[in-house]
Image (tube, rainbow, N blue to C red):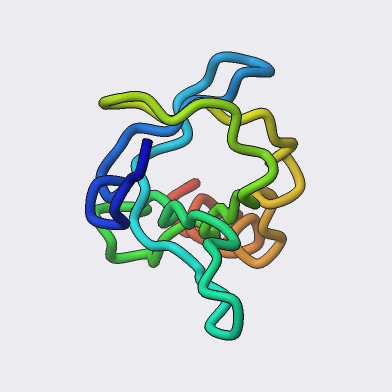
Length: 101
């Protein structure tokens, strides 16, 4: 079965390891030499209505995709390292300390 890139966009991505919802496919990465899909990208969630930026994007390699369904993509990837953003943690602490007193 063939699938267009536009069909992948906005499909919900679920992690098979822990069952958490990672978000929706926002973009894809393609190898221009071979024309193969390399990875899907899920944009990071907005912080404070987008005023404080957003979390780091999640990049999931093509080999980590288990199943592409009609509405959902199941992946088996370790994304814990991609979610940690030390700069975001520092900004959050500064923001929390501002309103502490």
